[in-house]
Image 1 (tube, rainbow, N blue to C red):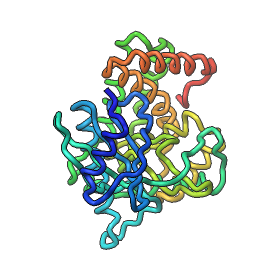
Image 2: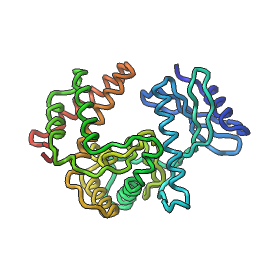
Image 3: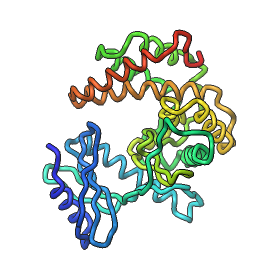
Image 4: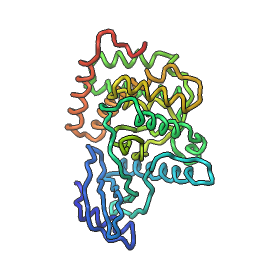
Length: 312
């Protein structure tokens, strides 16, 4: 059962001694097993309260708190790392009666990115540079923090596992399954150097003032893995010229050898995000999510041209 605004305010008050909540707005969690609320206190400060509804969501929330702690340590002036955007900071927490804990983080202002309206220009360049900074963070720090570290072959194996599990639902069009299988069998695509990745980006988690990226939220999937995972949302929904501009600026900012398969893997990641959404619905036994994911998969299948082979 979803927690009401009064309970979310009480959790914020318990996590932030001395702060008196004056306004509470429940936030849409889109099928996640999590309650979220934006709380403003009597000092005018705003925080986000996150309270899991079950153990799995609680584990996800703990991973995000660990990731935010790592980012705070990395962004310390003594490290020489500078994040060109704001990330949430853990401001407090409070135990829940049923076990686990609610976590309170600072609110990050900004407008969500309208991916379909993205064009080459300052915002696309800023986005590319923001991703390049994330991808340039020290992988050893992620490992030391106990967060996942995946090799290129392990990334591919995880994709294959997702493919098998999505196929077992019987809800993925056969054409998509065959297309993804061909991509995963393309060995040359999977010879990349793993980097630190956000791992779960979309237009709601990249915040902007209209010209620059000002904040990035939703860090629960921070890991070492495939940089294409952070570009999948763009490959899925951004205009071609915008994606190409981001890829070009990203390559220039990284000063690394060009990855010729990055764009193709990004497109695969964007498409298979729908399979992960389907699997999420299956794990929650949520028929609404399952039906929504099925409809999106069918729309994707219908949108593909006969000669569209994702660069194969």
